Length: 308
Image (cartoon, rainbow, N blue to C red; front, side, top):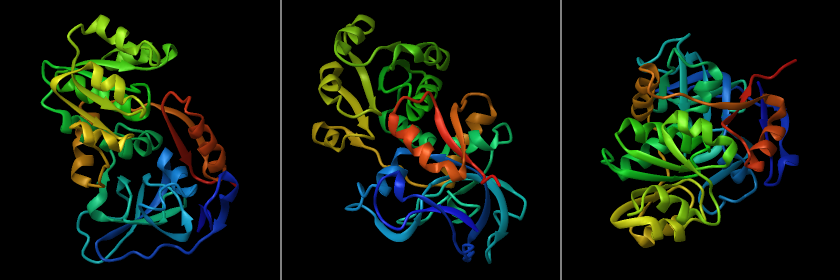
């Protein structure tokens, strides 16, 4: 099969279109023909060697953890799925090697869910990692009904999902983002504020007594968080592990089909929408990584199948 892969750590120059063996389909697993694969910052951070101290890597590596596609085959004793099912998954495994930037990927059935029919392939591939991360963060900060939540980096993919989940949970949401993204943040249910210098004053103008909870999807904002958080308030971060030293929770999301199905239900009832900013054919994964690295996107970046 065709796949994007790299044989050593490095920048986007180590990523190449290659031929790789078709994945084996173990008992309890499904083989998925990839219709779209989401791009996440963790993909290129692993490729750079930045997570070498955390995760085992077996070269050559096919990157990618998010996928949407069609079941091509099932392993023994896998009654959950049949050939032809439309599915999606956050496909992280403990060892980095066989990812989703390929024509086919094999994943344990326990982390695969049926794709919401209302989502396109690209939208479905954009949701798993960001959606599960947002959901785990909001769960960690709850209950939020009637409380004020500050979201750092509300305009990022995780932040956009978190805004919707928090608003659905009854929270008043204040979210940071650049001015160009403020209209969309309002549509999603947040009161937007500009990030950067002067943030505390801007948030205090909306919430003079401070906020009840803070979700950090940016990093480097702990000082602002502590200054704005009410006594006894809750905080969680996906970008700063030191939050735990200040009574907060550091979030590292787990693959889980049951949790993904919770998101599916919210998609199907119209509560949750998914923004896709850019798509690239699979062979342009390096360009997709570069766009992700720029940090200026207004939604998720997604890879579509190889073109001839």
